[in-house]
Image (cartoon, rainbow, N blue to C red; front, side):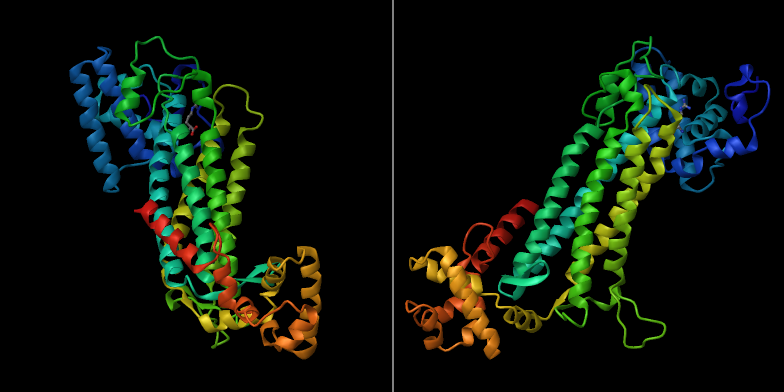
Length: 465
Ligand code: ARG
């Protein structure tokens, strides 16, 4: 046998096979052109495994250093683009191992002692995902900070709050932005929670049943910064629930971005005119010279479908797989990689885009004046005078009808007219009917009063650091 038993793929399992693998099958089954992005974690995992083998007396010091030297050379080759990735060698694991054997000889052949590609790949994906989750955590903080800054600036900027996309009650733009901060805070919390389940070590499970070597699994886990080891070998090599959980959390984060996007697109349309996005986030039209299109939010809304689709792909991939490892699991990578890439790019862009939102406070305020947004305030005013709320509701409906007939806002009706609906109404009603009065009145935790918005801004700033 040549020094490199993996010179070609069918030779990797060698003796048993009497014909080479078909070209089509080779292409169909290989994953190297997408899983090579796991090379760093693959090497990290191998080095931790080798160190432990040596510590346990399973691998000699000389072999251990040969493996370390070989891996350093391989890392340098990959980084400089000089590594020769071979389709024949199926995946990132076999490619790196084959090269190690070329460089380190028998020491390289000893690396796989007590290990299988099944626990190796599960380890790689977990390590990779854990580090990506940490980056996503940072990006979620950046986005929240940008939203909090905008909220702070606009604690008193009044806009119409909507239900059913009909003007409902005035809210502050700052309050509206803080709603998204809450969503992204929960997204960050979800990422943090699931990280703990991602960050466990499969190595030691070997192919499926564990291994007869006296491995120190805890040692490997600690050296890779993992929180403990997977406690059942069959489960360790086969389940990808950690990736599915991530895909679900990523989908939710994208859904939140998509909702924000939808609002930005609406608000930027001429019919609303609430905001403008910085030019660097927009594109023009090749035919209509006047156009400035909110492409980034539109694309983010579109890409949300893609990430949600990956969640469906991953969860369906798992369904129907018997224990333990099945090759189906090789299909976990592309959806996972693409979900991570899409979410990271989108978060990064949005943290910047939010910072570039220009608010047209006048347009917002004018829109808030349009739909009798303070009608509830009048009902509350009457209720506080002892009128049962349901009766007050009815009275105000009549007042609104009258105002519509006259083409006026409630606050523009003469006092006598208002008193015609209820004699208890006094001149103080005009403050109640004003947009500012309405906002200030909602001075309750979670409410839109500027005082509350400022308190929330402070709380978020302390939380976000
Ligand atoms: N490329 C494979 C994957 O991504 C690695 C594990 C292969 N294991 C096996 N027994 N064929 O899942």
